[in-house]
Image (cartoon, rainbow, N blue to C red; front, side, top):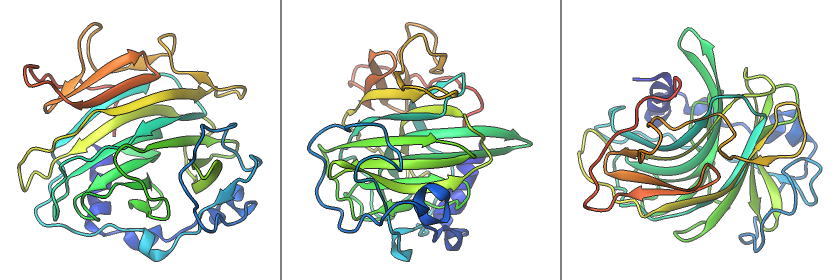
Length: 303
């Protein structure tokens, strides 16, 4: 069991949920922004510029205690994870892109979940990994059948849901994770045609980190069963250089780890990944019935 899975287990069990009632205002980027107020409607156009506190209309999310959940469901074990995507072998100061939202057959009252997410992370040694992730997720313990925008970080060790941004199958979400300076890592959502700061966390990662883009599926080992996942489409994935400058698309010239040999399709637990453009445009979900399952080998030590 990896450290990240252990931390996720504690969060799902509610052991550290009390630590999660924090707002982006606790960090410098958030303190300079007005509250987002009424969330408005989903964006009608792509981002007009990079996510930052100086972006036109930028705002920060005001969280409430009800927005943080780590309820306990029966029969959870930390096994049953399936990851499809890629990680960088070099460090970057941020990642951004777009995920489509799908409706997986997540079962109520379980620790099933389906997520499309970005992550920035650093292995601190001695079994300690720090990270921030953001994306959308559908879970068995919170409103099954209803996807949510979410974040998770190793400061709070709890899932944080943002219900003021209603999403449904077929929608797309634009996300941006980055740091400007001082090791404060920020997660942004493009909504109502402006950047909304979800959280800003002072993490022991530094000014650059390893980056992941994944579709992640977890099947509750206490209740074995199948979760169907229609293809999740991912595109416009860009990386911020660690020394600053303009973001660039995640292409084949970026050091990338996929866990499979060149020419092999990445597969795990009946789910398959298809690269449209390596590595900024792709989709992952149920494999065709005739496709045999092959789990990817380990990437770098992935939490």
